[in-house]
Image 1: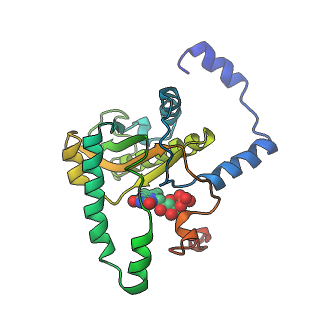
Image 2 (image 1 turned 180 degrees about the vertical axis):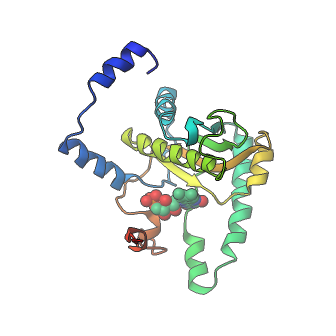
Length: 223
Ligand SMILES: Cc1cc2nc3c(=O)[nH]c(=O)nc-3n(C[C@H](O)[C@H](O)[C@H](O)COP(=O)(O)O)c2cc1C
């Protein structure tokens, strides 16, 4: 929304989020999943456009909107990214021993070979947008802004029934080179997007006995 009259009209009539909406919103949060198993069905470009528009409304330090999107479309580039994942995952796997190693080997940690849409997300660490507000002492606030945007995208995708899978088991330097982006763009995430094969209310890593949710992050200390 950019038209001043439209903005003024909207500001005069803010929406009311009622209990029914809150219940649905809680369900949305509970049912957002990291998805690694995708159908091969394509995703209408309009849906992606809709999500990209919504993602622009995410918070960012100084309103810097430092996220930079690369849609990874070619089979060759995807194959290189998957090879990057396989190399990194082999190294990651070697950090575990015994039963843990066997369990790790069974985990599915990406859907690069099937996901119909794939995006590499970067942070433009040199953007002038925002004029430096909020990032003088913590330049990494720019990176956090990209992550905040990703969560917005992730939830919005779920409202359309689309799944998002975040892949971080990648060599960021190799990704930057493979995708031919400026060296000043910091790699933040690789996202697989598509229609999920299955729906679960419990995270895959919980279901496969890798890591339960705990209460550590629920505790609030007081000072
Ligand atoms: C920063 C970040 C990096 C992640 N990297 C990976 C990854 O490389 N592979 C993977 O399968 N899941 C990855 N995930 C997904 C998490 O494993 C997942 O969010 C977590 O197990 C909880 O499951 P849920 O998202 O379905 O609730 C990542 C999530 C975040 C936030």
